[in-house]
Image (cartoon, rainbow, N blue to C red; front, side, top):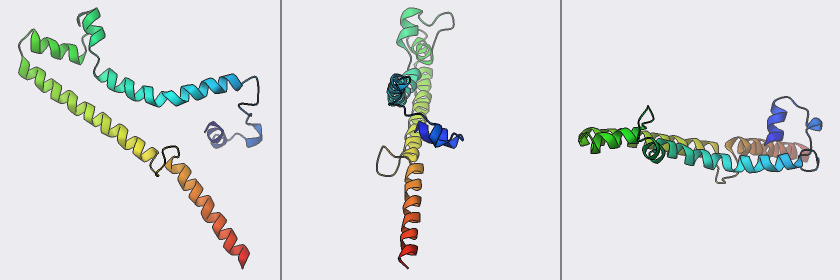
Length: 144
């Protein structure tokens, strides 16, 4: 992936290092691979977690001094101020936001990786099919 990005940026293929054979960068390459592998998964779990942040601000500061998140404020409205209807309306709005974020993530990943295999992007599939078409055309032209 990085080689392709470097080529698109204009770097010559002969100048791209052998990431795992070069001892000065092979450990960095392995670390980068691990970071790349878990970035997407952690990003999805952190987005849903940040939308529902309740425990740290509630336990540590009880939402005072400007640390009240949406859930802390909703909890205060429902249980301390007895405004259950308003808290329910806030919960429904939050549910809508979470649904929109979830659908957006699903659509993005479906668009980015939708060809029947989860390890190949649409762009890679198009490139592979285009190369196959060119190869088929060259084979037909050479057979004449």
